[in-house]
Length: 406
Length: 147
Image 1: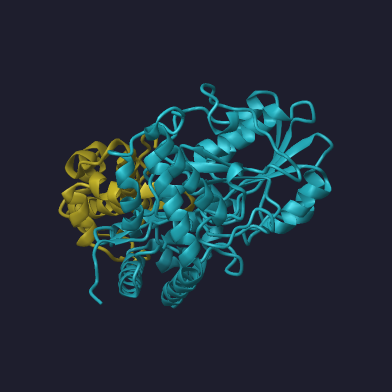
Image 2: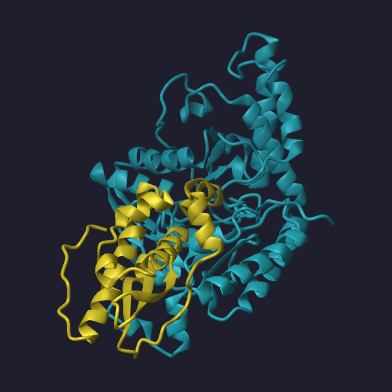
């Protein structure tokens, strides 16, 4: 097969839309343009029917009832609706939320907002493998706890949290369990009933659907969960999220879910094989380390630190042909490297030296082979240029050097 | 993850890309020699470490050779590569006058990368001072720039 350049390995940031999704969407921009809330004419009925069908497709992927799907503008909005909505709805029960330090900013910053409202939030640390310590989680639960918010799969490391064990703890203590499933849904089997999930945020554009649409799953029985609307208006989405539905995007979201469902088994096998090939190819380099437990990971994600070279400098060696992300934050004003990697106990130096590879539906083996060769070549070249590498090779303990911090 | 590949290509000037692809004067001088000054600045935790070395002609006071090794982003590598080019042929006193803003200008560094040029200036001064101390001269102290 021919090698297609440039290579896109940043599928955890966003995925290209599957052409089959686009095909499903197109009629809903033009001839089927109706407002799904227009109950008195055929334009509205056609739109409503399309939304109902998409709602079924979305629900099916996660083993939910269609009535439990609340469409939003994306996962960030769904995260906000879940956390703020539960905080408001269950105010009489308590005001304490438990989350963890490796969550996405959409969860962490929403929790920070809850604190400004007078709520209490526990930010659990994770272990070196990226997993939450269940005993610590249980210890953090108080009579005032109303919500546990722990993500399904991490966007930077791909680490999958012990969702079923967490939900059992939540059940045992009568606490609701919310998970940000953005990276996991469509990639690995997620079943809200088997997994014991009460609320879940996810997004279309991480699974080959369009940007600007996502969903919040809200459990309707055992227990019946309610969230206070964060967007007031016409009372759409069972009153939990007002706003005219984005019909073409919702149709695309539904189609994307259907494709993921049908293709997941074969696709996850294909991707984990490619990911393992990539990882094995790169770990032949000295002083290269996988970040996050390899045992519980999304099939398409690899996060690797190449010690003694800096991530952004590394990307520059091949970013004409390969698009990916680094845990280095050399361009950000704070110069702080990835907080997720630091939460795993990595020093700033290793966090600065990391690359995140996010494979996807359109990643080919040829592209992986090319990437292995290009990354290896650049690491070797930059190490020849690295004073730290030279010191390491001379046996100097870099931790014992007094660096001039600035 | 806050940096994407595309953004980087946009942010780097052609000169930075050229220094990154073809760095000048990568290497190591014998730091035990009396006429070699070594400056090691930055910290691994900050994502930048530069080591800059100068070899001074004892008779003329002219910098005969300069080498660098840098751990850092493309701008850090380019700043140190450029610094070594500028150092060669200058006297130690002339070298002391190199200002980080000269590097910013030459490489078209965006504001977020100015710290790379400051680090390069620090490395030059540290190398010169190392040379001075080795040769019984007092260290030159300059007000520290904000990074």
